[in-house]
Length: 103
Image (cartoon, one colour):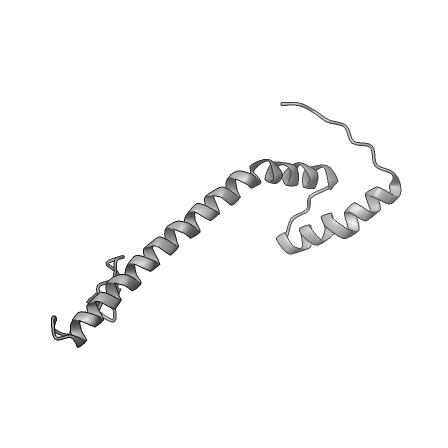
């Protein structure tokens, strides 16, 4: 692991503390100093691209599941109104129970 030294003027230190570190500490019930805050945020920057890619993949997966569910429900409803099927609740692809019944 590499060590880095950063030199700040008093004005720069005060601005970092008041504009970034203190609000972060307040919001997160933390007590970080500038060095700890900077390390945390640099580590977050280091993983940000991977995290964004994972989030995008999760969104795409969720959209595919939703589209398949909507298509299946549309088919079920069309079969119902065209007399090809009996009325039954739509299946839930997650298999979760709703109001005491598995849908």
